[in-house]
Image (tube, rainbow over all chains, first blue to last red; front, top):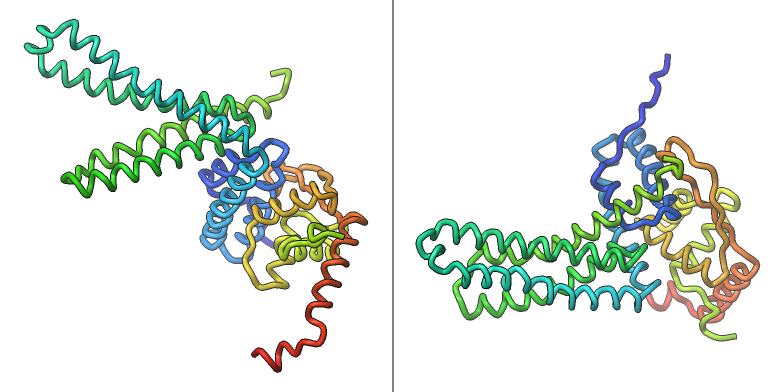
Length: 210
Length: 110
């Protein structure tokens, strides 16, 4: 008796990534990659098929990103500029809150330095939350282009941060932890976009009666 | 006739692949046909980006098939070339032929 070919699961993360960049009406793109992955897994083995799948994922996302921007350049650019301005405003809020708290309870902080250090950590988390919020807002505005808009904003920020890091590195001793931490804000923006995109996808694929 | 009526290199290849595949033309078969005949690796994203552009120009039309289990329940999108697309590929072929006419590409430039 011939063995029955079993369905091989394609890499979940890669599938999720392509899903983030495709609209529900573009499901055929992911369907094509999955179909060809199954054919390759049977013909050339699962490891080869997985490598091919990841290669296709990266190239396809690059094309979807470019196409997404070309299809609606002005609305995407408007969302990115709006997000940038919102980030300028929102990222300053944790600092303002902290300065108000420290000014008000100056005597307390001087005797409880450890607690003050915890507040500083809270401020760092506040920065991240602000970036996440901005990512969500940009994605909400750029409906259907959530990942394109948030990734563009993240790339703009990365460019600015990169330029600042180069300047710092040439003038001051390099703090690697601080350099790595600088990349957290753009990442939080992209995560915000992914959250909104995933929720929208789930809402459109759910049956209306559910 | 303007320069806009000609197909780009990859557009040209895709339309020719669609004409070869006839009613079997969807993402997977188009990608495989191009890889088989041109020996160059093509991503499904590049194929769809070009097909979408050709559809906007009115050179191809698409329709969705039924979802199938081997595609994780996702449908196929079949493509076919329109009369306008056939005219565009003929124009492009003719232009290329006119440009290469009289040139001994292998003998003179290899």
